[in-house]
Image (cartoon, rainbow, N blue to C red):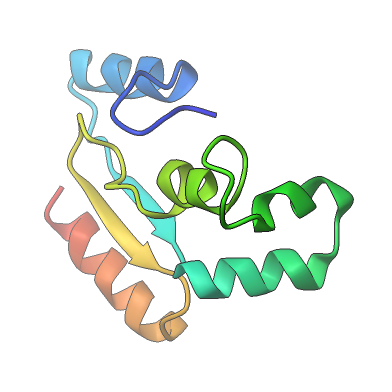
Length: 103
């Protein structure tokens, strides 16, 4: 995965090309609270997720997962909109439309 604040390969290249050629670039960063994500992972029940549940493992457990995928600022080099996917869809759509109007 692309660690937040570091280059993310394709995403960075795409955004840089858009900016270089004067395209309007809109980044919508979707998130969910940690407890919702954890509940989803456990409900999914995939064996590959089991190491993520360990609250003491800083390398592959829950602290690492939180730092890498949940408690992140979103793209740090580009203006973006952070959308909480647990909020009502109509509220998120309104927020996205307002963001896109500013582009």
